Image (cartoon, rainbow, N blue to C red):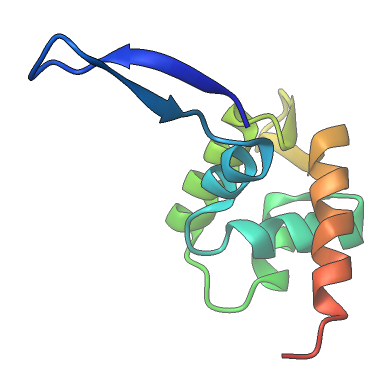
Length: 113
């Protein structure tokens, strides 16, 4: 875990602030309803279109799925490929980082709690 010195605005002294570790950064990216489920399904399916993904995740609305996919894409966990056809054909899949997260999720699945 990295640490840095940061000035305390209330006084002239400095305080030590812990920077987040790698696991903390990842968990922040996974925070949010449905994100781990989306990663899990994409990892099992390899790559799939929006409609297929939506049918695999029971109870998710199209709006929420779109939002989660955009967030995961921005975080580098999901890739998106669009073919300019009518209607547009959009395919989603996991990046290398997303595949690594999927592997972790598969291991967590084995834990009996």
